[in-house]
Image (cartoon, rainbow, N blue to C red; front, side):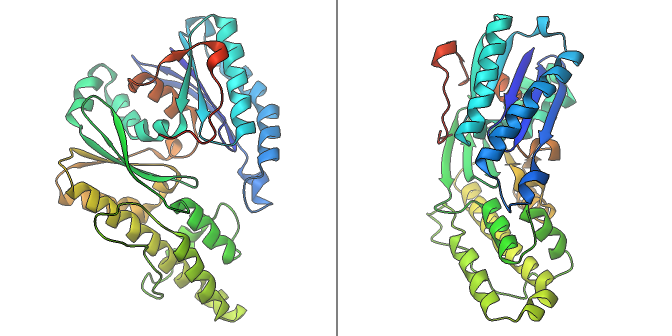
Length: 341
């Protein structure tokens, strides 16, 4: 029985995972409404909210969980906001010490990398290992507000990052685009909703393409292009054309993601394609990658919506499924705000 704590940014989250039965409980407090007033996450406010909400969440978890059955405490220790990570790590150390169980630090991005396999495990926990092996080697795309990267997972479940972003992450680009359009925060879902009524070919925004040999992403030029386009338009024109602007802008992001992913798939033989991170909820992106996977005769494993954002369920699962995750001494576990995958 694994107890997990996630506090890397603006979500305070807990989860309990039983390898024999799957996730037995998940508790989360979101700060979206608070940070929405400021157009983005305010680190000091996020840290304060973790301090305020972690104890009540722990009380809820304890009311529904027999803590005597817990065998490990795991916690996100990077990457993320230093103050937010420190709250979770301190709580995990205290809990592990009180329960006299091992403490494990988990990389947040590794949690995202393994999150598409949570549903595979839930289907039949007893036969998970054999079904997991049948899906390897695996190509994964993590796409969120803070990270955009491609990685491979071999048959030994070893992860190798093969591409990342040179500047903005895809989710960050969508949020900044929404901010330029004065749409609110978080911008990605708002852009997607408005894009449904617009034309994706109305504006020709750059895709950040490069040679096929370069798999890294770049979205800063896209954001700049939108700003230049808006400077040419009157407020009335922007209001009328907002659906078209959103559809075209969103399509530029999706095209870049799909193009690089397709190039990566062509480099080797994969048995599955994974999609995770907050932007994985975008239905247009999911449909596009499903078509790519179907064209190559492989499975698309998209993380369930509740496991695409910052959540403790994926941290608990990764602590069990990832062979690279090891218990650490209580004093040795620190925060790693810029920890690489």
